Image (tube, rainbow, N blue to C red):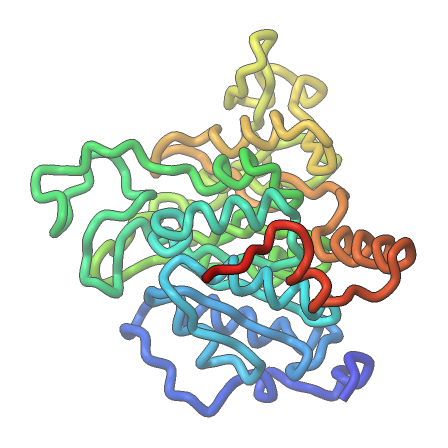
Length: 340
């Protein structure tokens, strides 16, 4: 089947026959439903799609997708997915990881996949806890987090996943959450359509070991006042009837204001296509806790050279200049020696 024939698929065609085994009430179910519902709309075929994961609760994801996939090694999903994407640039490659898998042992693999701009759609499930190993603190757990591995409270400053991605020069960076299927689908759609490395942080509830971590922001009753929806080219405002907004001071710092106090013309206009990542970085750091308004949506989306395309161009140029290589000649070229 070619990609052009996929309009005939349904959500059911993308779901595997495997029993979904997450804890009842886990936020992962909502993410899985959003992805399976979105896939028929993307115009891609299951046999041309690959899901690669590492280790963790989120990393069971490939079992539940009726596509090619791999439940790989702890933290190494971006490295394995890079190999797939470079060897087969015609495939649609997704990476599913968690805050522990992707930002702890897998941190280097993640940042280099983003730096290289490999054509991957990376979904990072952030529940700020190690769920699979039963409740230890993770690289995104807040200061003072009391857990099985930090009984007196964590003293580690947490990673900000979006800031990490932007620092690695990711060309697409976004945030969504597991309680809004429509928002997830639209964010995942934009990430998939982007050519290059797309990074999406998903606020995901672990109802067993870290229940309600994001509830002050993402629960339905709080969203109007706590979620700042970013839309490229529009003034950044939020709250009931858009009564609050974001401004940038003369010192370059972002601040939350009442729109009536400053006027709409003073509001910061979001520019997701800005080459300089400083604005996206400032927005990623606008909220410092789970009790204040937090931006969601696409922080950055820029065009730059994609890794597999650059490699293919380089190989084609070398072939044109030198012709087909000779492996035997290479092995016996300079730098060899005889022993004995």
